[in-house]
Length: 190
Length: 181
Image 1 (cartoon, rainbow over the protein chains, first blue to last red):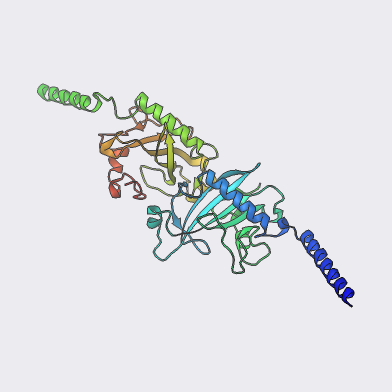
Image 2: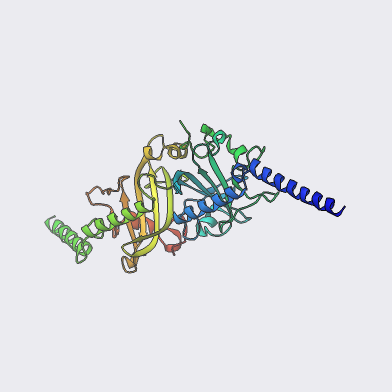
């Protein structure tokens, strides 16, 4: 009786272990659309590269603030350039989203470090990263470089939010030129 | 008549000496050209000018700057001195719009006008700004007299960078914000 109880426990343990392994194999981190460990690690690497290029953090380069629209900030300041992350170089768009009741183009120009709600970033990854959606990596950072989360607590980095009816990819799919970029078509693949 | 022309020429000579004596012209001299080159190189290293430069969002400008503008600001180190820098891309062309410039900035870029805050004492009366008007390739634009536009441009004149920017709110010579007071 006692032996059989132990063997049941062992069998259950083995089953759980197998199931765990199977889950790990069927859903490796980089197969998760977003918020998985690989996406979060890549977001950190991207932040470091942006910081080194003076695109985020203290002493960052500023553009000219302009009036935005939801879901982005009331006032925006958007830069784009190309950036190398590891061995890959790709197009990068950095949008500072300014929020708050009293925020205006003038207030942001005067104090670009105040009222900064988030920094939303698009970075064009290597071909094959997300072929159906033009290989963009999406991230929503806090001013300190940590990641914002969605209402489910998922961190916003990766192919955000692939397959969902709302979110980065769903909305940006409508951008003119088919490049997921609203402001211009410089990154359209011809 | 003769007395009047004599008086005029004396006045002109006096004006000439008072503006150009001792320190030479306030802009366009060999030192200013060397400074302009050093500033351009530093900006280029930081991807703020030249091919592959960082772009911001174009907006509608007004004379004497471009019809459409794209302005960045940051900190720059040149020859050991670090100071605020403002880089304005001036876009021209009959069909230049915010959208056309965003799509093809190279097509419309006419000049890059730069303000770089120099070390104290560079131009104490006018907040120590260095001014330059570059062509997209980094060479300098000239005024109608052929003077290269770099240095204390055009100090003492009724028009030009310094005269106009003196009217900026906050007394910092910057129109878009008062961060450099």
